[in-house]
Length: 169
Image 1: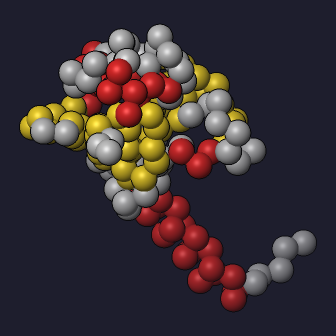
Image 2: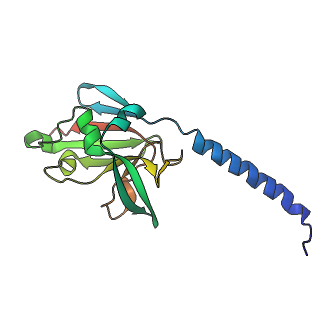
Image 3: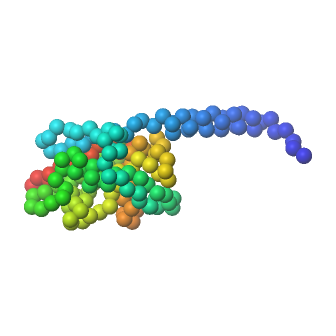
């Protein structure tokens, strides 16, 4: 037998409104757009269609106890596309840093040498999908995934910008 509980009706209504709002946020995530800034060169903007043409990979990774399969473009491929010489890092370029920035200003840094395939070869993914679905607005449209990091501190959400800078003495 069900008893009517009238005081729950406003709560249920509020939850329905929140669910609709969340669904709208997920479906209206901004299209992927990435600015890449290099020391003295003009910035490059890489939009979703360009990212879609770059080599794509799947990476299975766990963040805060939540596993998933992320799909996207290796960061090395994005840098190469932007004209960053990542395939033969030596000499002064070993003092180059790559800074990833989120929409809220959060930043994470990598050395170019650790990303270079012939040196560190660290797997870093600029992901746009998780478990086959586009990233929602809380994570994306682009997100950095660093599966080998012991903690997801450099898993930057809502990536908007990459800076490539030579560290000067």
